[in-house]
Amino acid sequence: MSAVLLLLPDFALILLGSLLRRWLHLGDHFWSGLEKLIYFVLFPGLLFGTLARTRIDFAAAAPLAGSGLAVLLTGALIGLLAKPLFRQRPIVFASQFQCAFRYNSYIGLAVAAKLHGAEGVAAMGILVGTMVPVANLLAVGMLARHGETGLLRELARNPLIIATLSGLAFNAAGFTLPAVPLQFFARLGEASIALGLLSVGAALRLRGQGGAHGPAIYFTAVKLLALPALAWWLARALGLSGVYYDSAVLFAALPTATSAYILAVRMGGDGPGVAWLVSASTLAAMLTLTFWIGLLTGTG
Image (cartoon, rainbow, N blue to C red; front, side, top):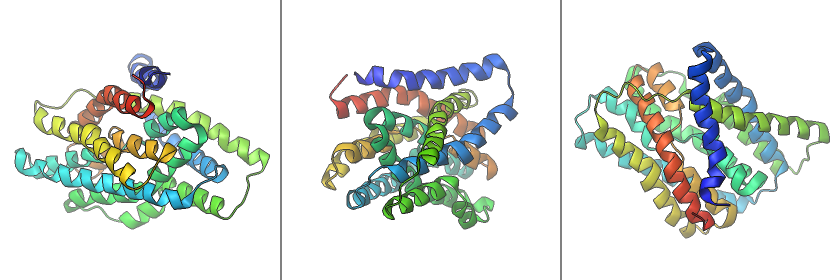
């Protein structure tokens, strides 16, 4: 299957989510509630169930996590270079800076499932869960002047981190899920991917940029082009292959997460600008992800 056909159903769901928000007029409360359901229940269920039942080579998973860490730190470093290049107010830069390295987990897990099934979801789950604290610390650190409190407590209660660590511990202990819990987590996983992609589409915002396109182009190019190019080389240098290699490149190529917008708003930052940047990154990823996956699979 070509990369275009592989990604078409997932990006069709994203576009459908955008249309449903505009056509059905369900209101912000509905979509906010759906996002919470996915984030706190469905998505953790997918991560735990997949990690608990899939055989994991922990020796190979260590360099996989290392590649994810290198990608995030490099994205932050390149993002910092934008500060002297563009004349932005400090709070605007601090808000948009996180768009150089934050990643959309929903798209990552959906595409990983298409490429490698449960093994792909498990590999992506390792990256998604273990990189959550790093991404949050980098983003909050730049916005810290606005008084974020209780960060460590927030990370300790993060459902993605809890689900990832619990699934890995369950797996490492050699436990096996009985049939009924296995089906329960499988149903949660099936719901999480489709609803997650719909919620990504519902969050698209292409108004409010205000004409400052230089920084937006810069941060988007870093996230969608520079970081996957780095991962393409680094993952091979670290000895990754197969599903882990593909997951490392895919993780680096993901568009910016909508959580960047949520954090900017909570900390008094440039919410509209970040919302526009996240949306532009998501739409541009329809082309760039197709390119990177085409290279991985040898298709066009």
